Length: 499
Ligand code: SF4
Ligand code: FE
Picture (cartoon, rainbow, N blue to C red):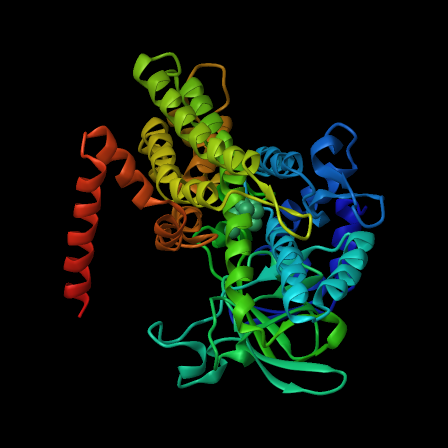
């Protein structure tokens, strides 16, 4: 297993090309760029905690292929206990970073691929699963940081990939030869991509006959020939560039450090290709990835919310109102909301089931409910933190004002709270709340791992509403023949409407 420092060294040896505000940076310059370094530091925590005996119970696992001790971020879940430990590990790391540490996406991609390729090979006689296992072995041995790359640009959302005016709006295969394939297109909103060793491409949606070129999954080094990345702007990035307390969470950033990744005719050898044309298995892969990733959100956002709660409560303490009953009530409300999102992640893990490959899969309905809660409850948690923190969150002077030899003493004097506690500490807590509860952080809770509607589509599919109607009609005392009558009339009425 790598330490955080060894992971950072591995990035510095790469030739990853990243455009940041229109300027090209490469290799070590990417790693040390102030927009990116905090994200690197957060990802490094996933390595350091695995090397710390205090946390190894959660952060390491035993490889089911080699029997070696590995970082849990490279593990295929072998039990519900593994699924539960994953969620607990995420909450732990969020409590250490207060931010996204990006590495879950690759973990979810490999588990989704592991289960899907096994079933695909059994049905179609392909050999993707063995190829994936060979790559996974290398991944575990080298403790790679891997980005999961699913979301395509999508162009006109009403059209399928093969119907787009520009065929590159979904990643597709443009050439196949005896050595491998060539892919073209782009992936968007790529969490952790610029500070990963590899990316694993997956299709973005369920595909149909005619879309074969778009049914592609493969592993590619992030710095391979033909690839460049365009780093996204975030509401707090100017603060990161300045450095200091105004950044709120200076060391670890706030969200994932997302980018647009452009793939200009990138060659991928066959041994790194895990799907190529099998449209009928694209839906399974997309769904499994989505559910594994939605499993995470109560863990990672639960841990991030722990920091938000702590910051709000400490802000109240240093300001002199920590003991007021309505503040305590608001903190309790935040705890309730945080544990609600966490409970869904625990529940979908505890209700996990083995797949034919032997790897365990989460309960998909509960995983979607959990992520859906995150799209709402994090807003409530952050709203309460802003309520407790007060208007000063939005009007506070900068660190430079505090340090200014002329006016610093006035900032110190007029922003003071409880006597004896330095103003700087109160300012630090305020800046942390300001940064964690606004802008990019909230959008990430809404759309990361899929927008709310993407969760809702699972509900009608996975929750048996007909069964619920049967139960209700029984309790209401409607006899069997009455239930049948209702069903027949309603069915006839709906099918008439459709025509
Ligand atoms: Fe992991 Fe959460 Fe970041 Fe997604 S948002 S990569 S689940 S830490
Ligand atoms: Fe995410």
